Amino acid sequence: MLSIDYYQIMLFVVILILSFLIIFISGCKQKKDIVIIISLFFWHTFFSIFYYFFTLSNAADAVVYYRRSTEDGLTFYPGSSFIYYFSSLFSKGIDANYLNTTLYFGFFGTLGLVLLYLSLKKILTKISWYWVFLLFIPSMSFWSSGLGKDSISFFAVCLFLYTITTNKKLYIFLPLSFFAMFMVRPHIALMMIVSFVIYFIIRSRAHLLVKFITLPIIFSAIIFSSSFVQKYVGLDEASIDSVNSYVDQRQNYNQSGGSSIDLQSMSYPVQIFTYVFRPLPFDAHSALALFTSIENTILLILFLYVLFKNKFRLNYFVEGKNTWLLIYAFLTCSMLAITTANLGIATRQKWMFMPILIYLLVYAFYRYKQSQHTNSTKK
Image (cartoon, rainbow, N blue to C red; front, top):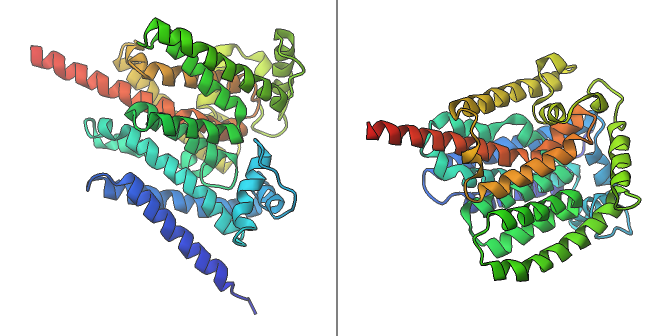
């Protein structure tokens, strides 16, 4: 006879209710937000539950994370150690099972999705309604819905995007987004800092004296972060030869399986394209890969459509603080593209910068429509 764990059922219901209330309060600023926010909550929660069942029958880090979280001697340290520790707050702290711990992490993915919506909200009200479906890209919700680094990193990059685009609580949310990213993927957090430095130097309107005073502090943070990242990723020393060796080594990793690719035979632009838009239908070797390839094809068509409409001019992509966002996306994409030789891993990890590219895509389309309207009015 099957036994029913009433405590876990009760915990499941409580997590769902609390998550819904927090998401609803955070995302619903106006009445017209209600339908979208509720839809995003149930859409993403569905993927959390689906991810739970998927990982029970497929090899996944999530199961390992949960098992390790129930052990003793866990430390609060960046990387996998943080996931063990953070998971243990539920698995050991309130005796949550694997499903409920998955929902706990899925909540951060849902919050990230809501932040992406809030970043796009003003633009979406001024263009065709169907652009809102970009928020419902299945793989974006799937990979950000489970127990692991991806849900936290997705939340971090969406908070980063929301803070820059809305300029709200800059001195609270920016450090929080950096901290969240640093605890799961320190090398990506470093890209956040580096992108800000580049933007601050070339585009900031701050007085020269302010830049002169601020830059030493920023560079000190970069030196500290880079030395930590150097140890984290396993670089022997901070030299060009060491970096080249590391890249060559990474390009030979994960070359087993149907989704492996030969990075060393590709040029840099092809590596970037491969990381962002593949697998395409001709690369698909499984049902999941085929589904992802359809998404990538649609995204590729949208990007080409917007670029074509703008006559391949990138001026809208670098307006104001969009420059900062584009620099971050470019640096992160470049770093990952030249070191990831597996399309399966790329499909999962590209959501650390894809929300920003999606925002820039929608923004560029909005500015194009706006310019078209202005030109027609003048005529």
